[in-house]
Length: 129
Image (cartoon, rainbow, N blue to C red; front, side):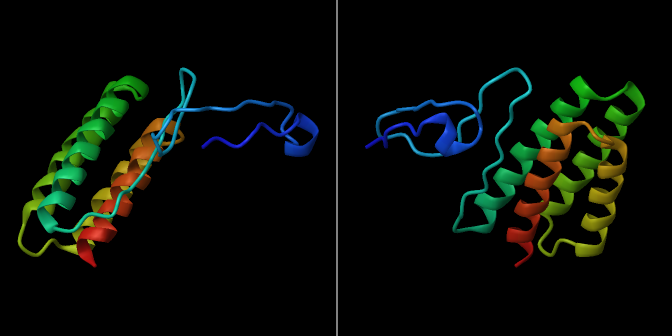
């Protein structure tokens, strides 16, 4: 069930729109630079590791399209290291933190890359707890 659109003055953002996707729930993004980050609760370590690996692949792809070659290579290399660490029986929290810090530095202010870093960080938090 979709709620009716609020008038622009009630929402305060100058627009009024309703999106109805039937029974679909979850985040929606529109526009060339739009990205969505969503972390779903998963029940097992293998599922979390699979989500981490997928997020790291997306991170490397975003870095390749938004960063210069040297920084994109750094992000890709460190993303590979993080994927390997995620698969270890006992991932090293300090090593993960160091790699995420290096990736964050390389990303600068590239919005899509920064959003994926936040997603990866949240997934590692879930893995380590």
